[in-house]
Length: 75
Image (tube, rainbow, N blue to C red):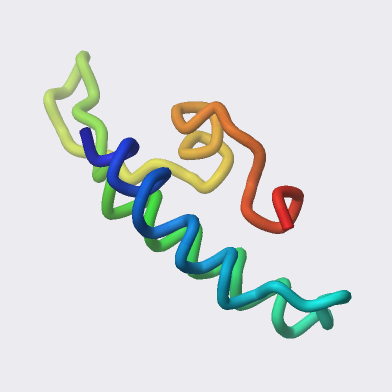
């Protein structure tokens, strides 16, 4: 459900705001940070099965769960 909200509401608003012919490196970095924050809040932490502890997912693991191209490639 959270992914659908991200794809239908948040992503189009961000893409509309960034409709420029080219992005500078700083802007690409900011978009990447924004997307990482959104994905981290969406997926949260993961419970480890063996110890029962909560572990933090890395950015690559978030993209694996999200299974869509990152925002910079979409632009």
